[in-house]
Length: 172
Image (cartoon, rainbow, N blue to C red; front, side):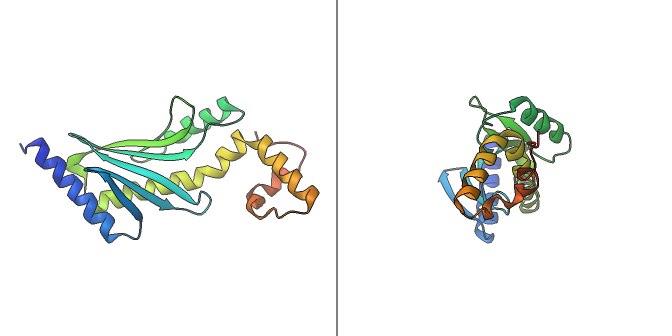
């Protein structure tokens, strides 16, 4: 059985090498703790932290701040979605902010698995972002839309929500 410190350093070295070979923006915050920025389409950036612990790699990615409204609907949607996720699950912190969080045994840390795991984080954060906004921030989005339309301002960054914004009902 390999010494835990050796396995931990091997995992950290694998992560360093993977990130150096990637096009991702990243930094090593301190030994065995990495910050990675995953670029997306709906959610333009997903900040992700990789923590190499004595037995597991922790993955922590911020998705959205706590919902302004419809908390139960948002959290139920996240829990239902968890049933289909690979390697990570949606979680909330003590403030209600939404994260993707997961653990991977250090023995499983390879370039291929890192690619699969970070790809999953990016996909889940990006694919879920607009739904989280629709469910948890509909009132704020509607007020912003109405303010911009009334003043002739651009609504380009709200186009993803145009369908329900132009109807009388919110998406919840």
